[in-house]
Amino acid sequence: MPQVSETIPDALQPRVQAAVAWFNRSAASAEDEFKVTGILDADEALSGSDELRLIMCGGDRCEQRSFRVTGTVDSWQIEFTDTAPLAQGEKPQAELDPPPGVRGSWLDQKLSQHAFVVLLFYRGFW
Image 1 (tube, rainbow, N blue to C red):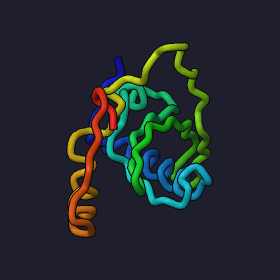
Image 2 (cartoon, helix red, strand yellow; image 1 turned 90 degrees about the horizontal axis):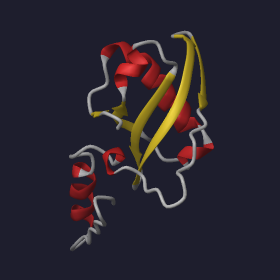
Image 3 (cartoon, rainbow, N blue to C red; image 1 turned 90 degrees about the vertical axis):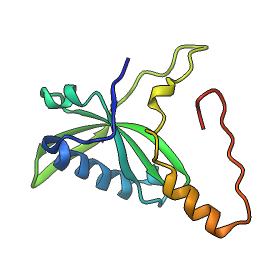
């Protein structure tokens, strides 16, 4: 089971920042500005893997995305990694949801704009 951490290790910061900047320039961001809110299995990336599995939030959505980040600080090569689709009937793991507190500022912002906000939670997913 993946280990989710809200804290990005210092050794991974340059690669993570490069991946997020690359994602924000891509069509996949849909012109939203994404920020990293967590990382999956940071120990694998620290032990030499080129793959980064990040949880990013931007606009009104949070996503788990995987990147292959190679090269050096001056010239990163970044691409999405192909992940295997879920088997038929398999559901995504709830542990991949954004860590607690990610939506705190979003909720405060929406409450200041509207008289009320309806939140819908379904079996641990949002």
